Length: 204
Image (tube, rainbow, N blue to C red):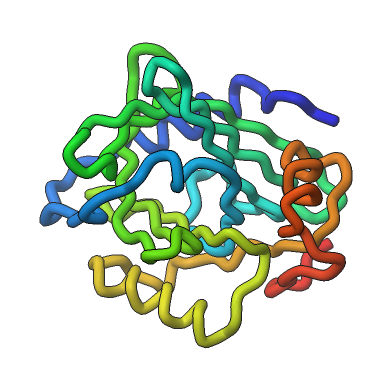
């Protein structure tokens, strides 16, 4: 199993996330994020992707709150298909706004931090949307690898309400189990991985 993505992957991601030349209107965030409840594994079911993740499958973003208050983050996915190589990015999140816990900086390389906004979070912490003021990238994430068409449409509508061009949205193929995926053991223990997940693009 590939433990860590090549440095060039992380660097390309950082450059993409730091890029931006316009000043769009502010992007509202969730009113309050309980960090302990937000931690754990999230399946990336759709995104407006950064360059390094344009062909991602089985994307899972995992968070762990560190003693210093920062957030250890692991984003693991297969590149190009379900049999593709594993790519793992491990930035560190810093909560910038402690009043809401919804505005973070995500650090791939010191001292640079990319903007990371929890723009929407459902009351049960089962679905969330991560965005950026530039409306250049976005991630729709849920606690399960598959959601109903109705639920997916609701999440896409919320992203559109935030000012995103949802025509740029890519559905991320998910198919489980994936035994060598970094999140596999945790997902199996928690009963979230299923024998057949969503495969919206037919990759693999």
